[in-house]
Structure formats: C-alpha cells, structure tokens
Amino acid sequence: MLLSLFFLLTLPAILLAAKDSTHPKLVKLAAENNGVINLDAKSFDLLVSPNRNWSTSIHFTALDKRRKCGPCREFDPSWKSVAKAWSKVSPSDRDSHFFATLDFDSAQALFQKLGIHSAPVVHNYPAAAGPRKSAKADTPATLDFTSGFDAHPLAEQLSNFTPVPIPFRAPINWAMWGTVVFFALSGVLSLRYLAPVLRNRWVWACITILTILVMTSGFMFTRIRGMPNASPDGSWVASGFQTQYGQETTVVATLYGLLSACFLMLTLVAPIQTSPTRQRMQVYLWSGIVFVLFSVLVSFFRLKNGGYPFKLLL
Image (cartoon, rainbow, N blue to C red; front, top):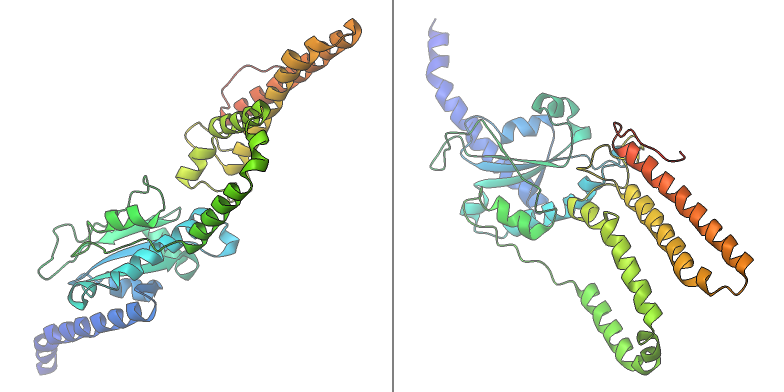
C-alpha cells in the first residue's frame, strides 16, 4: 500500500524527468545531422510525445532505390537545405522546433498506422504544452506541394509553423553562373560565324516547332508537378486527364512531331514535284502516314480515358 502511494506521488516527477531527458536528446540528434533528425518508430514516438513543449515538421519519404520514388529524391535536397537554414537561428528558437525525416523502410507499420500511402508527405505537429501550446496538437497539418519542391517556397510555408521565420537563402549556383558566363563569352566571340545561322528562317522555324511540341506535350506539367517518368509498377500511362507521367510526354511529343513533319511534306515538298506520278504518290504516302499516326493518337487517348468509344485503325 505504501509502495503504491509512493509511486503515485513520484509519478509526476518521473514523467517530468523523462520529458527533460527527451528534449536534450532531440537537440543532440538534430545537431549531429545538420538540423534533421533521422527517425525510426521509437524516436518518432519520442518526437511527437503528447506532453511535448516543442513543435516539429516530419518528412515521410521512401528514398530506397527499390521504391522508385522520383519525387522523394527530388524533394529531399530541398528539405535538407531548409532544415540546415533553420539550424542557424538562435538556440532558444531552434530548439523549440525540430525537423525530422522518417523513411518508409525504417517504419513501414507506422506508415500504415498513419494512413500514408504515397510520398513525399510532410506533417507539422504543433506544441502540446508550454507557451506555444496549440488546441490542435493531436492533429498534424499536412504541407501543400502546389508550389512545387523548391526550397524557397518550402521555407515560406514551413515558417507558418516555426517560432520565427526560417532564414533561408538560396546558395549561389556557381556552376550555373560559370556556364552562363562561358556561353555568353563564346557567343560574343563566335557571333560573326553564327550570324548567318541566326538569320536563317529554317532555324527559327525548327526552334518554333520544338517549342510548340514541348508546350503541347505536357512537359511543363510534369516538371511543375514533379511527376515521375513512370509509375512504380512500370506503367507509363496515367489514367485520367489530371496527371501524366514523363514517358507520356515523350510519346505525345513524338506523335505531334511526326504529324508536323508529314504536313510539312504535304504542303512544301509534294507541290514542287515536277512529275505528276511522283507528286500523286507522295500525296498518297504522306496522307496514309497521317491517318496511321492519328489512329495511334486516338488509341493513346483511349488509354487515358477508357470510356472513349471511338477509334480509327487501332
């Protein structure tokens, strides 16, 4: 009886001691890895303990090559850059918010428990105690990736959850500036040799056509959204019109390019043929190829939308 009473009286002190020992451990782990704590299931529970007086941003990812997660590898450098920038603020602010990363292969059961079926995902857990205590401490806020994976917009969004704004500054890309200077000097020195090329209308026609193909094939969509080249199961066609894989962009651009070439042959080459027979054969040839390519394009459209009822040849 006395032992039970003693345990009840000392329980608050035990919990306080555990809490006091957890925070220095987290601070040490963050300092050892440029501001990012690499988590497993056990350290995750410590970081989001219900009596925490700190907030945290946790990056759920799958970086193993077997997972074939292109967005994960694309986002990870930005995450580390922002966390490193946060490690430079004053200790009083830095040690009240932690950046952490949890890989799928380190805690698969935890991913399932949290209902995370894709990556990357960032959850922001507010403080559950102390002066920054939040009424929604048990409900993490999920980061919105509509601004892409770049570090600067990421730092701006995460600053809404940190005690002070994250002092992120993009590092100077010396390789890029060196390349720019090199090509600028090379362009100036070789201008007199390039002038005839730049005055050629066919050069500008090719540049225009390539630009149109890039813009109409979905290249910008896949770059902005950070879409992978193909799905994890190897499929390269994404169903529906709200998403698209990188290989789809290549196929669409190739089809549009071939169709453009056929129309150019019909409008520029076939009319100048001196032989009526040769001219007629070219018209038949290029018209047939156009019909086949349009059939392939319609078939590709049906792959995207299984309910589309029409087809040409295929």
